[in-house]
Image 1 (cartoon, rainbow, N blue to C red):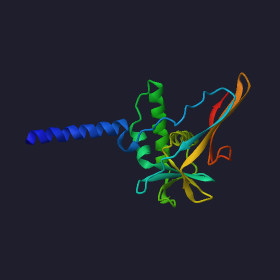
Image 2 (cartoon, rainbow, N blue to C red; image 1 turned 180 degrees about the vertical axis):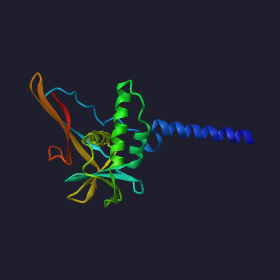
Image 3 (tube, rainbow, N blue to C red; image 1 turned 60 degrees about the horizontal axis):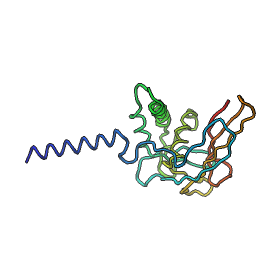
Image 4 (spheres, one colour; image 1 turned 60 degrees about the vertical axis):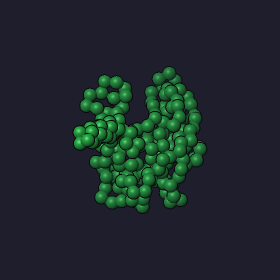
Length: 195
């Protein structure tokens, strides 16, 4: 009986570890976007509505403050991404995991000792712009919360607009814009592509 309990204990521990490593525990893995992303390099103007998970009460979180919005991210997700970063990236998936691990570390390394109104640790404004791509990916998948700073309340969804213009074969630019309403002024804009 004692041996059976030991076997069950170790089997449970192995499953828990496998869940942690694969990112299944507490939704730590970076999920795919809630929509099919358009291909870069074309003239386009398309928007998608994304439902946000938010950050549950009592969860340790990180706050990325923008002028119009505060983006809330579970600290568990960032810590998982830093630990899951592969040492050697051979595939595109491994390369993105490596970059997201670096970006998550940038956010964690730039935390201030103060908390915002949601109880989240605030990221310094001067953090590396490359980390915005991780913030962007978390918003696309809905794995973040967003507070409308003017209203002082969290929102349950946002709009993500892909807008690009090609002027010549080797001349164009595309941005990804995040806003509260479709077509409204964005609270965050990241470069999508440029040629």
